[in-house]
Amino acid sequence: MAQYRVVDSDEKIIEEKDFEDATSAYDWFKTVAAPDDSLDTVMQVQDNGEWKNFEVSDGGTNKNPSADA
Image (tube, rainbow, N blue to C red; front, side, top):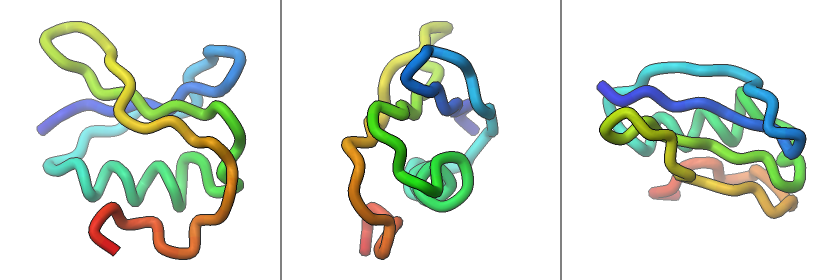
């Protein structure tokens, strides 16, 4: 399992959660953690003790949140 977190444009952590796969994490980011698709909201994944950007919101819609949609 990997740990993900959502960080807002002020670099404040909004929420953290563990997921078994990246698609579930992406869906969570788009529908739960950042449902309004706020500009510059970032989802990060912990990789070998470091947080790395996984997805960055550039605004828009969340009609098809899944990366596989």
